[in-house]
Length: 188
Image (tube, rainbow, N blue to C red; front, side, top):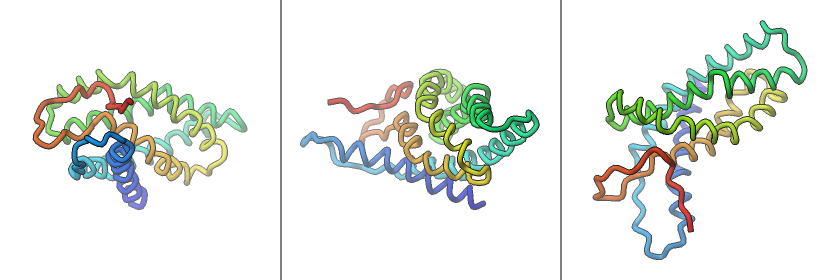
């Protein structure tokens, strides 16, 4: 339960960062008035609490079990865990869960959620590898197993903000669909 509550708080915080920081960083004097998307933060909180934290707990325990069963030791431990996590199974599962859950929580159908995953998974994976591989190599080398998920949850504030860019808030009164196949990136 503690990791679930922590996951909920930190995924919420990541979404807050994703909504507030780009608006604050936008120096355009004619930018529209800021409207905070509370339901979006609620979806992030629910995902962190009910989906990500429990699944991540199982993942870290399974990863540790595979490492022990495989007889890995020394520097081979972080390399094995990172390869398994990033390339073999976990990143694909967790990113699919995120995009699928966000689509479903926004009221889209299962086929629409599957299409979303197909549209964005490869780009998400590339971003994931650039962000998470260095972090996890250090995490798996220096942090005890029982605290590795906590490191991930704290680091996820930044990662969640990046993921949330795929789900930008719609401007007030704008009912048109945005192209959600790519994150919204502000350029100058």
